[in-house]
Length: 170
Figure (cartoon, rainbow, N blue to C red):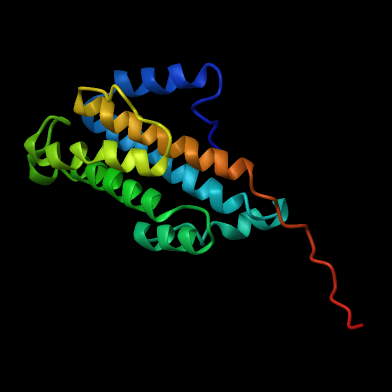
């Protein structure tokens, strides 16, 4: 399980790590952390002995994993939309789509401008004001908010017992 980035000392490490990376590296590493967080969310539902059997459940197409997470009540529709938006940006960097080199490339302008609206829906009550001016900062902020939301939800999940009690007829 990935340590929560907002725990004391971790947030600075998270931002420093992403700051030291290229734009491409920043997008890829940040979304690897998000994929791990999504997997941790699934695993938080299960007792320890069952976790190893879950590996196949979280693998596969991203959209399918997100739909599963929504159906289990692990993420909201807004979190799914934000996750897919961030994953799309990562994919463009990872696969060299459109010849992207930085978060400031025109292909990202509209997508990154939508992040403040999505962030306010994912974390109501937060104004995110001032929003980072740099596109890279918007991306990193969105990843950190989503990662934190997953971790907070994970802490609130009550684990299933190792064995469910037998049902008896009365």
